[in-house]
Amino acid sequence: MAFMLSYTPPLRDVGFALDVIGLDELIARPAFSHVDRETIDALIAEFGRLMADSWGDLNESGDREGVAVDSATGTVRVPAGFREAYQQYVAGGWGAVGAPLEHGGGGFPHTVALVLGEMMGSANMALGLCPMLTQAAIEALGHAGTAEQQTRYLDKLITGEWSGTMNLTEPDAGSDVGALRTRAVPQPDGTWRITGQKIYITWGEHEMADNIVHLVLARRDGAPPGTKGISCFIVPKYLVNADGSLGARNDVRVVSTEHKMGIHASPTCVMAYGDGGEGAVGELIGEIDGGMRTMFIMMNNARLAVGQEGAAVGERAYQLAFDHAMTRVQGRTITGAMTIIGHPDVARMLMLMRCQLDAARLLVFLNARAIDESRHLDGDAKRIAQERADLYTPLTKAWVTDLGVELASLGVQVFGGMGFCEDTGAAQLYRDIRIAPIYEGTNGIQAMDLIGRKLAMRDGAVVAELLADIRATCDVLGAAQRFSLRDYAASLRESVTTVEQATKWMSDTARSNIADAGAGSVAYLQALATVVGGWLLGRQALLAVERLAGADTADESDREYLEAKIASTVAFGALVLPTVASCAAQATTGAAAVMSVPHHALASR
Ligand SMILES: Cc1cc2nc3c(=O)[nH]c(=O)nc-3n(C[C@H](O)[C@H](O)[C@H](O)COP(=O)(O)OP(=O)(O)OC[C@H]3O[C@@H](n4cnc5c(N)ncnc54)[C@H](O)[C@@H]3O)c2cc1C
Image 1 (cartoon, protein in one colour):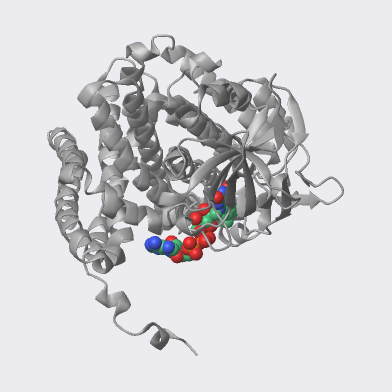
Image 2 (cartoon, helix red, strand yellow):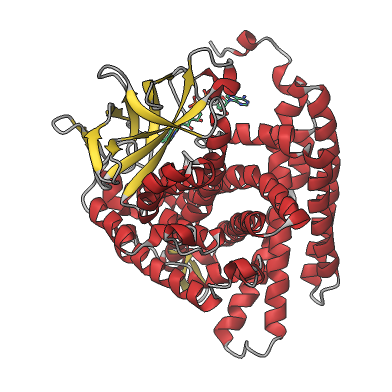
């Protein structure tokens, strides 16, 4: 049996999602007077072609081939075709799409750059991680770098000629970044010498780009303990001369790469800084001891991008599962043999994938739009957009990555036994996406961020305003002519009330009993994110209804498409919104259920 391993860019779905979150309203602002929707759509379609034709076809071979350290050259050997595929991305200028005009970028909204990010993640998640981390480095340099540092590094990172990495993790400093030991010593010439070991560094070494700009967290002697005493340094693989040309090799090297469950084609490197002698040469970026602020700029960008991987891989899993369900014959009806999509349980799985994928993509785009507005609006509107972006980020990172795993798992299930075999591609997607809930701050850490910092924003008003917006959409849905949407409005409204109560409990408890709040934090995040997803699907249905009533839907396939979008919303109401009540119940149960006996009593042997 031949399986469809190719990737098809979901242009219609992406365009519709951009309409739901209001891209046209965003680009009508003066900051985007140089872009228009037609150009954006053409750009997305063109990028989609590159992803389908080049990157997508290397996904499976990259997984099989993997990466390895070449001890003779001290670099990492990447799978066949990866270097060329990356060069196509560089030659097309794709890395520059969302970069500022003054640095030679396209000045497109971040939302548009994220659409490209989704396609990269769908086509080839392992390769896409290289530009993803470069984008995060660009963000950090753009915000925290001096003019001189920006001149030295930014343009080459934007073109993709150089790539970027993010170096936080050490053997004894994972989630607890404040425990890191990498040492930074100031030099008379203003540079620093960096010594230490970093682990799990994504694309830490390779030769697809001419230089690698490592952003490294380290501690100076005498710095305050914990995260308050961490500084951030630019440590290039090759030192950069005053005229911008490449100089000597810096004292940074790859020690080994990890053997992983998935993303085999992405080198996850153990990196040694300064083990050749005096230390690797680094430049401070941002303030001394203020490295976490710089890294947070990078991490917030990366958190949204990692969240998006859930939607990206979910899309690819859905494409595979859908094609299989439409063609795999198993069972009979009275009229003859049937394909498995005719079985109600397979239809349920596909619909669950469909509606959660729609919600996931919408949340990513909404989050990106809030970031765009936080950059381009003024006054109160700017502040409110920033607050929304801050609130959405842990939801996107955690909920969408969990959904990515669920979608990939459902994809395996739709294939039956073949899903468990590697030939279909479904198993690879499941292995690849499993990392997303772990890196970039585990989803447990995201949930703690939500209940600790985000709920407290403006004394709870930020989340209260979000829930009020969702209620306003319920009012519109409640007045719809379709019974199914009125029912949906009622379920969503009930879910909002449930989450509102859980939010009050969580906000109060987070101040008084962190164990009780922490034990319920992940379930609370799921409840809130599900309601936000439900809100966005409500808006999706309203847009579909509006278009169905419009004059431009004479085309039968358009009508079917819009009806399917409404069906996706209704399915979310039936299959997913009911989980809000159980998540909220778990969220507010306290720590006794999980921490009442001494830890050792839980041993199984
Ligand atoms: C493939 C891959 C690529 C990576 N890429 C990079 C990279 O490019 N750069 C980089 O710096 N790092 C990278 N990492 C590291 C990654 O970010 C860490 O693995 C992650 O932050 C978790 O840290 P840890 O592995 O030490 O787990 P731990 O911190 O030991 O966590 C173990 C468990 O304890 C939980 N936990 C720990 N502390 C808390 C807490 N305070 N509250 C609630 N729960 C908690 C976690 O949620 C988790 O379930 C990568 C890792 C992998 C596997």
